[in-house]
View 1: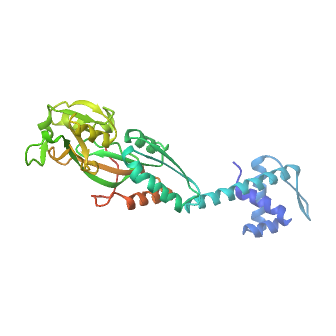
View 2 (view 1 turned 180 degrees about the vertical axis):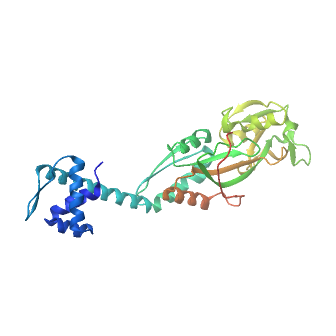
View 3 (view 1 turned 45 degrees about the horizontal axis):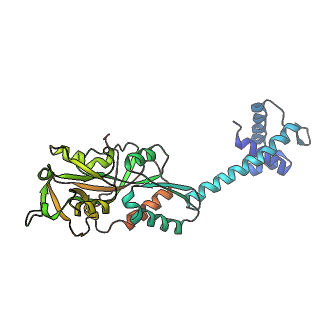
Length: 312
């Protein structure tokens, strides 16, 4: 690859008309400039200059090279300007994903606020569950994802990733009122081993929390209804189709639904994170993360950044 310092000397030779003038622009001695130009000729294996005792002129090959050098340095200048624009959030891009239940209330408003502040940064958004979005962040297909996981279940693979906790929500058990004993405020999952269960759509991956938690308590839940919409899930509970685990954020008052704290297993949580590459220092990623944290979920339990992790 051609040495850009030597190309710059050749370009400055044309500008100034002399090796001494080119040397002055480059901040070196005429002797050093002459040596660098000779090295450029040796590198290419062709004469670029016609030297005489009184003057120096470009050969045809030298003129062609200078024409290309002008374009090379114009592109380098443009590249430098583009890098500074990205650093100042006046350009670049950010590719974002989030799971369904946080997209409307959190992520889209944060994207709108980001666009108002940084109109020149191109944004893309994809709805995706963590089992798809986290590998996409890790391999560079996405820059940031809002993801979730469940306490007491195996942690996701965080190699090469960093997370910021947005919210830690407890899981509660939604039951029809006739399945709630008088004065009952908590229950063990095992207490409902014989009940019909309602759960999210997939039976594997991050969405399999109900199955995995129930199995850990020694029984296989009879899941008869599946939906990814909490309002539909709670409507089914109210219609007496079964019981469901839901995050407390989704446990809105509804006729026909009682909410019980889960006493066993203890520590059932639904954790929501911003997930990004550990090595990514993109100003756009940091700015959007800050907006997501600011908008957040109100009072919550945040424990800051984390990285690393074990294979789930």
